[in-house]
Amino acid sequence: MSEGSLEAPTRHQIPWQELDFTDPEKIDAELRRVFDICHGCRRCFNLCDSFPRLFDLIDDSESGELDSVSSTDFKPVIDACTLCDMCFMTKCPYVPPHEFDLDFPHLMLRVRALEFKQGKVKFAHRQLTETDRNGKLAAPVAGLANWASKRGNALTRPLLEKMTGIHQDAELPEYQSVSFSKRDQKKPEAAPVSGRKAALYATCFVNYNNPGIGEASQAILAKNGVETEVVYPSCCGMPQLEQGDLARVAENAKKVSAELVQWIDQGYDIVALVPSCALMLKFEWPLILPDDANVKRLSEATFDVTEYIVDIAKKDGLAEGLNKLEGKVALHLACHARAQNMGPKAAEMLRLIPDAEVEVIERCSGHGGSWGVLKDNFDVAIKVGRPAARKALESDAKYVVSECPLARDHMMQGIEKLDEQNARDNIQAVQHPIQILAQAYGLSGEKS
Image (cartoon, rainbow, N blue to C red):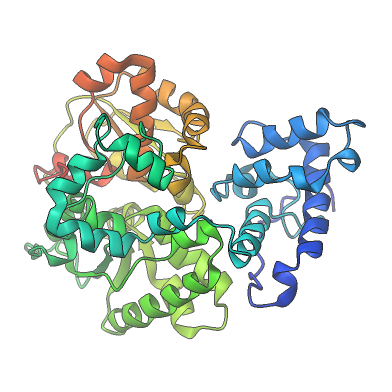
């Protein structure tokens, strides 16, 4: 099989329960095999910071080859991977079914599973990713929590950095006093769409941090006659996946899928409101629990929210009433949306708006989930995201949005560093493209 096979890439199941999966010697052997292939190719040099770190490590070694690099020096390379999957999806010519069988992100996941097993994940970092608990605790004191976590708070942010390792200049999401799942639901209007019902998987971010994304989604679906129910059993486990806690991910997968399949049985489509969560339901969970019937059914019934709107438009036609926007939209295509292999659905959706000007940005935002807010990573995260921020700034767009709301806020920090006044005065405070569509319909699309 030659380099750059034309066959579609395939992903193997993740054998996380097998002893060999976290065997240090076997992991080291696989790291050295994969790193040597990457060293000979270097096609991924500009995707993230993992690959420049790897190539510099090899180039600066005694022989200029991997054989003179100590395995103890691999950690910075591993730590820089955000599990975005872009090397696997868009760059690597050696992914399965190629005989080299290279899956860089899942190898980094394997290393993190070993580190988690060895107790090397810091306590503070584990607490940062307890999104459900943190959201519930913050809700009754949302005003105080948001004040304390606000960027620029010279009293609290240095202390927060010392206690948790979160960089004091990193933008953090606000908490809401009333979660999305507890808010009044919007009922459908007279329907051009016949028989559609959607269970909206709220996701921890929409539920606790920005219900406005969920409300915009509900309003649009109601406008198009789609009956909706908000369902949120718990987080999908993506934050724990990033840390290698695969047992916890599997636990969440079983819990959430068991509840969501009950809605599938009632004729509901499952619509995830954030792409990282859609990716988990569609692709990651079936690799972690391949024999779980609920997980399999759920993966086949799940849509990303932008994918679902486009599906309605193509099969049934959208309800009338979309109005022209004032101003251009700079749209960042999130890595975890691209990794769903569904095409640029957010761009397709926004182009349904009459005369919409959409500038698509396909570069990495640099955020990488909880990775980009940490003190050790924040400056690198801003550097990695600078090309995306620069393109958004140069587009002179009124709206800068991303399918990943956290990526959008991180890009805004990059834009501020390039042109603080422009970011403050000219760009609207809207995170997600679904909120733009809601505005075009004359529905609420603001952050709430």
